[in-house]
Length: 103
Image (cartoon, rainbow, N blue to C red; front, side, top):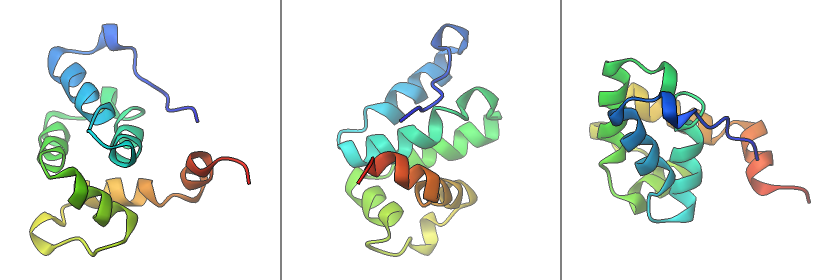
């Protein structure tokens, strides 16, 4: 799967840190879900979007995996526009096909 990884040499320290955190969450499922969302978008994110992303990334991996996979509904207190954007990306049919690979 191509993730459109950013050129890390062009990123500021904050974006490099966020990229690393997104790609190395601790579980493979959240690495794919969060990292796959972050990689192609990171360079173009505003400071406010980075703040919102970091708030989502501060949530526990197990909860994120359950919410983003649809195993549990997203609680109102964390149902933010950023969480919805990550959820939409996680459920994109093309992305799901790329993650699952050929049958």
